[in-house]
Amino acid sequence: MEKNTMTDPEIVIRDAYLADRDSTQDIAIRGDRIRTIADTIGDEGVTEIDADGNIVAPGFVDSHIHMDQAFSAEGERYPKFNDQGGDRDEITTRALKYYDNTTWDEVEDRAVRLGKLAASKGSLYMRTHVNIMEEIGLDSLEAMLSARDRLEDIINVEIILLTTNGVLNDGEAEDLVNEGLRLGGDVVGGTDPASMNNDVEQTIDTWLDIAAKHDAEVDAHIHDPSTLGMYVMNRLAEKTIEHGYEGNVTASHAYGLAGVSGKTKGDLSEPGFRDGDLKVFKGGDLEEVIPTFKESGLKFVSCHPGSRPGMPIPQFQNEGIPMAWGSDNIQDFVNRHTKPSALQGSLVNAFKLDYNLYSFATNQGLEYLWNMVTEDGAKVFDIEDEYGIEEGNPANLVVLDALSPQWAIINQADREYVIKDGDVIVEDNEIVPEKDPLAT
Ligand SMILES: [Zn+2]
Image (spheres, rainbow, N blue to C red):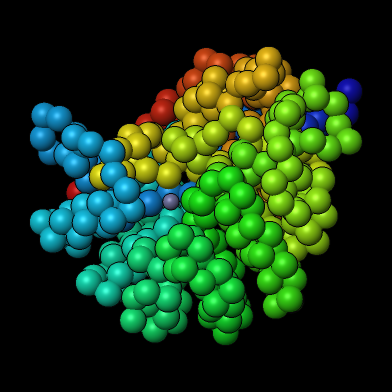
């Protein structure tokens, strides 16, 4: 048995199951890095953690969330804003009503509470969309920038400037996004080039032009279903290539993918393949769009509250096209009352994405879902080079009370420990007091 020693490890995790190696290892951490992974580490850590053969996972990635809306349904016996569903106009009305009746300090505190909850559930990376509208200017962004500062010890937050009402519709939107990126926002967001902005070409060009000016990525909500959604995503991919912006654009939700014909060279018994769909336009088959998506480096996010059977999760993962997960709406006015939990999202998806006799609750299916909350999330976050449990990588990991990814999802495993940048931030599903951003 290989035996390894290192000088003065601060934390040693013993008997940790690492899924990508399919073996149990000891992990030594010093400073903010994983220093050594070996069968046995001889040195004692200042802190010793016995994983007891359970899985130690890299910190989960929540690739799509709305921190500036979080918990807005709270405060009454029944969830607020929740008596009916709502179209986009209705949701915008609710957003303004919410912001009008609360303070930005309260919005910030709720965002901090959300970040704390996410970290306690093992998410160490979170990408949040922030509403940018003429009526509120950059107030929401400023609250989220403060929230991010308060959360920096427990979760990495990336901020997307969401032009909620369409970058072409709102007279100030483009200026606000430029200013927001200067203030510390990270990513150019947006909504539906077709159904929201009514100009596919100009909308996508505007996003990409703003992004290029600031060397920022683009992450757009593409809600349009079916052929319209596919058309928009095709143009997004093609324009990404035209602008030389490959690898820097994400399509969130991407519902159109769930409606596209899965007829490819593959076997219809494979997950995600549907038989009998009509090919309705050029580019409407996966086999036609996959090469363009690959060339453009387009990344995708599917959030479990809105995820749909038929999303080509297995095909994309097998082709190396990232398909990540997000928790989206945390008990807010959009009526999707999720928790910011990768394990909850994966379990919901395991049942919900089932179709055509294929179950995502199989070992293989659960592995696809696990990849969405880990490695593919890291690609959306653009941190794949230093993500994962490897020597030299940042020590960002979760010690779970489960033997494998599959059992972690099935049993909604306890987060025994969460470690961020070499510090223990969670013990027994709770943020440790000294790292609590809400402690007074
Ligand atoms: Zn969203």
